[in-house]
Image (tube, rainbow, N blue to C red; front, side, top):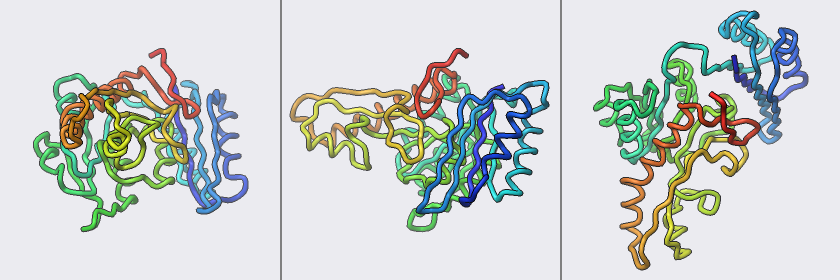
Length: 287
């Protein structure tokens, strides 16, 4: 069974050794291993993707062993396997203002186009609360009155609800590096309301309009710490407009129709296991 292991904590020496020795000593095949040291934050982060032998016991037992190692090294260790449970993958939908992307995702789940379960909706604003109520999905606002999120709450909710994939559905905040590493390996999926890589940032419609573009679009990509989205693109879509089209009309078309459809298709590719993230690159799978 393919298993993803992450370990994050204060930087120190010899943090990776006991984890690597345990999984290799148990006969696991290590497909991928990456380690990072953020000097400015004194943060150590490690990602491993392994094939765990069935004869060595359950993923739950592996998780217990590695978390015990983590406790001795002051590391937060997470062990995730898509196939650990015989159920639909559970998703957390993170939102800010726009209701169209989460609404499209929840409709696609309801109609069976996305074979997943919406376990929780998380917001840093209350604009999408009514969408969660409409589909009877638990809703939690994790931010203060200014919209500043408490990421410890987000982390706890992801663990508590046993989330497989975190969906940033026009979530207009940059996730901190430690959150990205704790749920690394292709578990955080972002909808960007512009074409990447030429139009990153928070105002891609405006930036493209200033360049007199006639083609606009959106991008669904995996979140990768410390790297710009490039090889992590899952799906992109575009639409053309006639010369002279006002920016307001372009944004209306993109936000109301194009972005939600792009997000649903990108999620479908991940949930149906057509693509995965290996070594920060999108790969087609054989599932």
